[in-house]
Length: 174
Image (tube, rainbow, N blue to C red; front, side, top):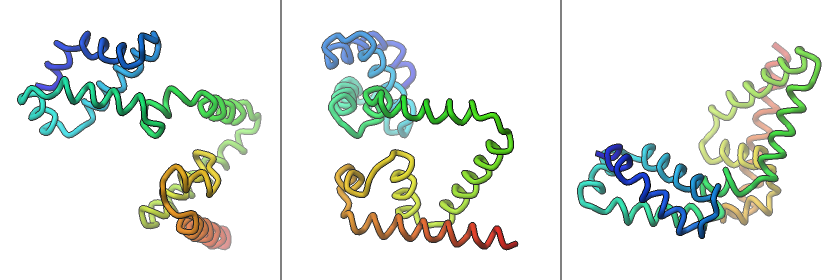
């Protein structure tokens, strides 16, 4: 039901995105496709129920508005933060351009180790740590972005960092 609705109303979805983005050409297509992707990734039964009740057009408009106006939406992080994309691309290029295969291997092994450690920790601590380092936040910017107290974030990140260091020491001594 959902995919059929998207196929029949594809032009309408693009038109809604075009109105919301005030006709900015790459933005309207990006927004429309991000909304379609969100629809397809959402709970299928719920979306089919909305489609059957005739509320999918309203839901599409609301989703477009929320994605376009929010500074924390997937659309915002993907398309409106070019400096972040450029920084990540530069890191990737530097990593790929590094001559030593041994360096690349050690780097990948270390990242896998950190991922394994994060899987063993509680959800909040692991995600606070990952967002703090992956997004390049300071404690203050992370606190503002999430609305979580700075001290709470500090304790979670510190405990996670200590745990990873401790596990790394244990692994090296084996």
